[in-house]
Length: 346
Ligand code: NAX
Image: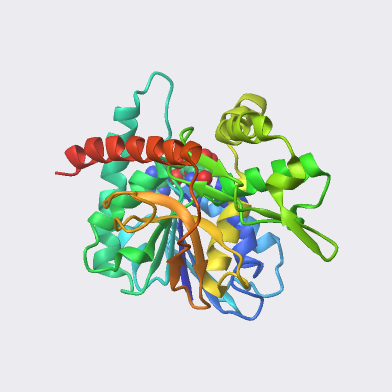
């Protein structure tokens, strides 16, 4: 497998690359060529990250050959590491593209300016996917605004099926799951089928109406165990929606360890499939047939995934009036972002 991580010199990648190189995503026995892309000014940092990967002395990683100062090719037993600042090289024949690198929001920057800067990056990367990647490539967009950046990349890569493009809402799902587990005093793996609807932003709708909690042999609905609709429809939702901001306020840096873990969860499920009747949330291309969400945006919904990666949106879930209004609000925000982004793409 050839796996590209962009933003490879950044803080999310710092945790993520270790997990991939350690076999935590694709399995310990899977050969992986790990391609690390960042922009030219970060070449030195990228080299440092490669050095650290080497110093982890992972059982399967053996560095063998250096080609140029900015394009280092390391031949290894199981994992081949290529660090580069060249788009053509980075996207050539890849099976997975984990697009983390993006323009960060600087102080005083309007949302429109952020979209403009990222429209340029994700258009270029979409074109590179179209031109250089395998047509079966699976793309996960992480860099914010993740849903709209994903839509931009998809639009710029017409030769790749739309279902090969997803964006990350797994961090939001993990945050929601862990809030419920903490409230009920159970471990995180007892809680399943939490849903994140819509945008990876503060309008997202974390929904536990169909979630369950398993203790011992018994499985019950989260709603019946929590027994507090005010909390579930109020503080729980806002805590999850604002969790990213809370981490920034505390750490003075955005979520990185938890974001890397969520990326691993997303890609592992996309590669190996979801288990039994369980589902997971991903931002996928809305074709207009799911839950009244109109066509043309990347919208997070629950999906079941077959081994190998084919996914289907979970259909037929009952939607309350409360849920409907939340789902529509986040869709509306995404159509607004799309309008702005398309202006910058032309
Ligand atoms: P950092 O600023 O630490 O790293 C970003 C890296 O991307 C930098 O090394 C930068 O040089 C590189 N980069 C910029 N433009 C590039 C390009 N055109 N090609 C390749 N590399 C490029 O940010 P980090 O904390 O790692 O976060 C990365 C992105 O993830 C941000 O946009 C952030 O907002 C987003 N997040 C998304 C999350 C999600 O759930 N979807 C959660 C975590 C995170 O906030």
